Amino acid sequence: MKKSVFCQQRIFTAFLCAFFLFISGSYAQTYNDGTIEYDVILAGNADPETFSMFQNAYMILYIRGHHTRTEIHTSLGNTITLYDENKGDAVILNEYGNQRVMVRLSPDQYKKVNKKYLNPTITPLKEEKTISNYKCKTSKLKFQDGSSFVIYYSTDLKFQTVYNGIPVILEGFPFEYESDMGGIKVRYKVRKIKLDAVSSNLFVIPEEGYREVKFEEIYKNDL
Image (cartoon, rainbow, N blue to C red):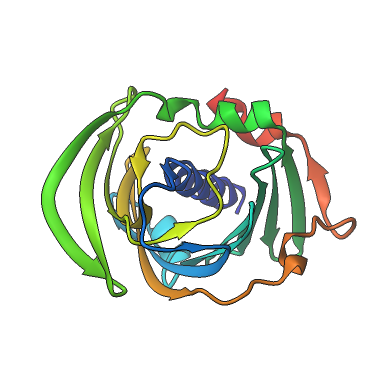
């Protein structure tokens, strides 16, 4: 169980890192609020336990102004990350069965988690496709550790949030990409977008109900 929990935490972190590589640019329209749902699909060399854990997995991204709430739901449990762009810090909530764990990340700690994504090599690709009625371009991003992302992104969608403190390398909103994390391939693809108002209650940090764990305990292998 513990191995699967940490596997989900690390894969989820990979999603956040890739997502925060994007920033607003020249778009058709800017939105303050939005709810974006992603399918999460494992492929490749995932072991049976991990593959089973991510069957029917999905991601929900809530955006309200300069706040985001990102949830990943699997058969094992849920991981929720609250990010405040203005402060640069984050809170991660892990919910697995009866376990409720909270991890706080300062701006410096958040940057450390993202350090591998600095200075990638960007290769624009010719392929284009439409996802959820948005026309998407494609680029391949290769990082210093040898890992890479092939990302489909649209410049037709913009939100207020620009995610300060994270290296910005592409202009566009991510609609689909596949990443390789330690031999485990993970694909994320938008399945639904809603541009309605998002409740501010979703971004409130819980004051009780979670056991707080130090950042170093979760991310000691990433420092």
